[in-house]
Image (cartoon, rainbow, N blue to C red; front, side):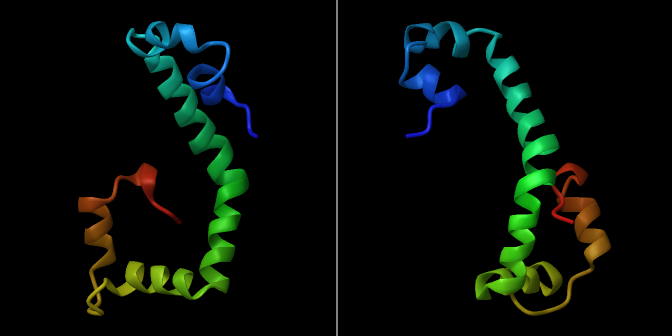
Length: 94
């Protein structure tokens, strides 16, 4: 059983404080902590390598890359225009 930040609040000894944590501006601190953890630690140091290995070694990963390259209908897309108009820079994969 994993016991971490969220589990302590939702199921553990901090459960009586849920309203204080999530129904007040304190919730913004949890959102910021999650963003920092996932965007600056978890993705670059752990998950990116797992994702790249998944793309290289699985059929689903290859299909994901093919969709990113040519779109789900198989017709090439203008990648530069698609990135500028639909995908914010902070959520690009590569």
